[in-house]
Length: 238
Picture 1: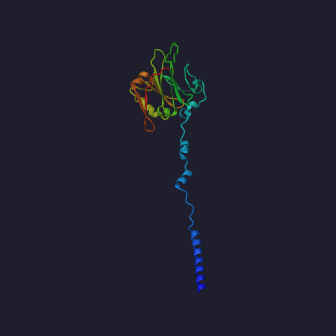
Picture 2 (picture 1 turned 90 degrees about the horizontal axis):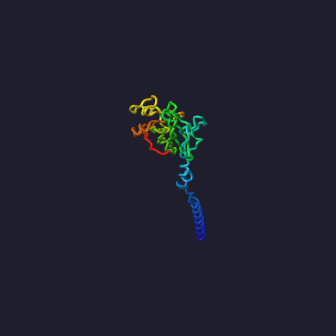
Picture 3 (picture 1 turned 30 degrees about the horizontal axis):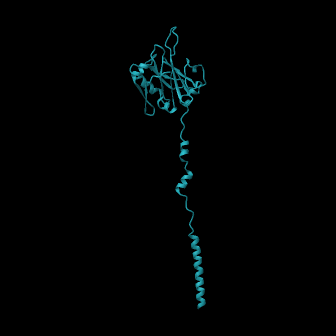
């Protein structure tokens, strides 16, 4: 009897050991899944990459294609002038109206520059006086938003002029509709406010300073539903 009991105890202990060993194998924990922050961290491009993927500002020649043109005779300025840090090799003619001859250029800081000279109005032997040019340079985003505006010295004894180079998104049909609606304006020679469709299809406006000051401001609807407001630029010493 004692032997039987001993065998039973040994047998029971062996079975228990097997069960414990099996239980240990089953209950062994699996590897913990990666946390959501770890997964996101491995796939996220991060703020620096997002910033790098932002659309860069357009180049000057994309906005005003005249800048891409091979230079020619038309691109020569009509008279000498101090252009400051404007790159002379970048100067390109935009067009001429009965008021002004207009040029576009870039400066050493990659700003866009608008240069306008008075068109001499003498048809006799009077010496040609181009006066002093009106010059304004602004950053590309500023030009996209507001364009460029200058006052032009028409020469001794003459009133000055105002010229506006409109932002590149402006459309001629809407510009004409607005400008021709100004009381007394017309499309004949030297109208109060003249519209120019330039060689690169940019748009400029020109007028006398008296007209510009009387108007105070010109509001033109933009294609995006906003409004462009043009005001007479302040007088500057050139």
